[in-house]
Image 1 (spheres, rainbow, N blue to C red):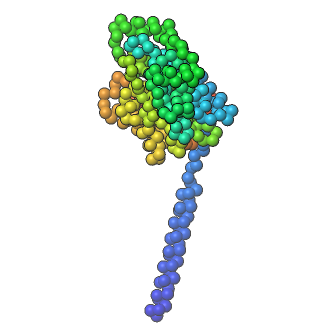
Image 2 (tube, rainbow, N blue to C red):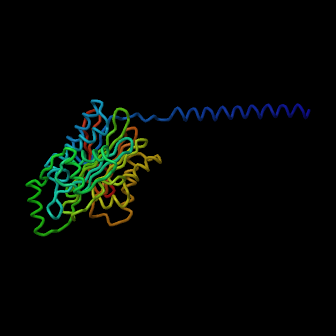
Length: 327
């Protein structure tokens, strides 16, 4: 009897294990079936501020099968050549001495990086930055050295101080009051991210820096990890606004690392801004980030309202105001 009872119990236990395993299997299978696949959204371009001509130009490169790196360079050049944009390229507002000095960087899918800082007389620093990346053993050239390299590479020097910017500078000299205004283009830039048909990401950032800055001042825009960072396995991020604050937190690198940990581009941008505002005293400056992950998902966030980002997907430009910390 004992032997028979043991066999019965063993049979029931085995059946229970089998039933339990079946339930677990079904539950697991059910969970797997409810997973939502992320549909890739590329080619795509995103840039800081309302720059439809730049994003459209970049999109056209992608539409023809061009690389994300080519799209970035061509898109950024549009703003550098637009004299009405007084924060980038020709027509940019000068430093306190009346000199227009330009900064830019570019980064490709392989993590290669090139940059120029404090460069004068060359209106397309984004293209010079690419030349630095591709044609030199260095990643960053500064001042007269950057200008000399540009001219040797075929770039034509010219006067970058337009009449409009000169008159504003002369007006500023009457008081010499250094007081950047939130969302006004005396401390702006264009940062751009692109993902091509192959899913490869590149980015660029170009600026004339803070208006009426001290000679030699360099902000975050040309500095890898601060104004721009690309990791083709994860995504990319770029910044705009008060560069000193972005530099202190290595903001773009931080955002890409947050995406590596599983944050969405939007969540990562929000955390990047929170790292800045957590230090307090953010009432008088603006910082904003845009980000893109490997699937082409994007995010943007700023400290104060008024910042917008432009996205071009399928040839359609969409500019909308970003969410902000200080609503």
